[in-house]
Length: 82
Picture 1 (cartoon, rainbow, N blue to C red):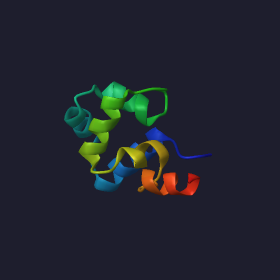
Picture 2: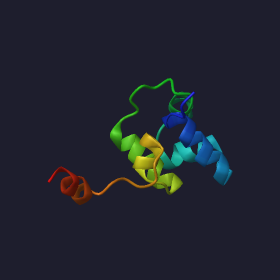
Picture 3: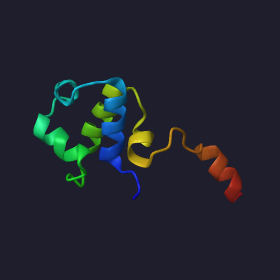
């Protein structure tokens, strides 16, 4: 099964040894809301929540959302089209 947003959040949080309660407090959401996000029960946690989680964990939103650390630059895509 493909890794999803919640899976990546939990993986990074566990890697840092950060308790869920600490992350929830840093992101200013409830522990229950974080639990739902990490268990992929929340289909759309909201852009600001994802941004705050990424900031708190020190990763990019691209990594959390897509599982990629880098994205193609817009100029590279435009050059391919031209």
